[in-house]
Image (cartoon, rainbow, N blue to C red; front, top):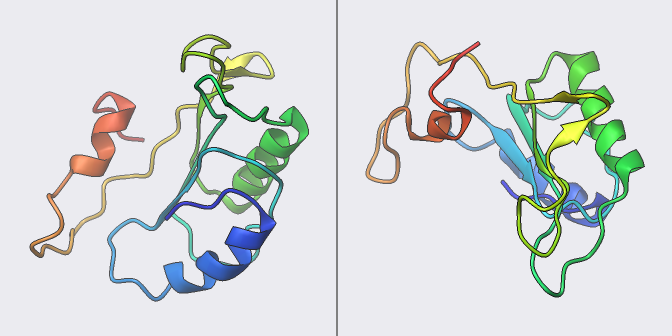
Amino acid sequence: MTVEDAATAGCRLPILGTLPAAVRFVSAEPLLGDFRIGEHRINWLIVGGESGPNRRPVDPANVRSLRDQAVARGIPFFFKQWGGLRPKDQGKTLDGRQWCDCPKRPRRIAQDSRTRPGSMFDTCGGSMR
C-alpha cells in the first residue's frame, strides 16, 4: 500500500490490516511528509524519495523518523533512494549504511489470481532475513 504522508496514512493504514495478504507492506514513495505507523499491522516498510525533473525533495528527518519507528517495532526497513533527477543520483545511504531489510518469507502465501508467490521479495536481490 502506498503512503506518502500523514493524510494518506490516516486514510490507508487502517485498511491495510483488513487485507488478506501474507505480507502487509507500506511503500512510502515518494515520501512527502512524516507519519506515524502506530499499531497498524505492517510487515515491511519501504521508503524512498522522488526522482524525475519535477521531483519534490524528501526531508531526511522524515526518513529517520520512519526508520526509527520501524526499528522500534521490529518491522524490516528498506530505504530505496534519496531521489534526484535520476533515481540513483543521490544514492541510498542513510546514516552511514544501506537499509535493505526484508521480511522473512512467510510459511504460507495466499494464492489467488492477483498474486504470484515470492514476487514481492525480488526487490531485495533474493535474500531473506
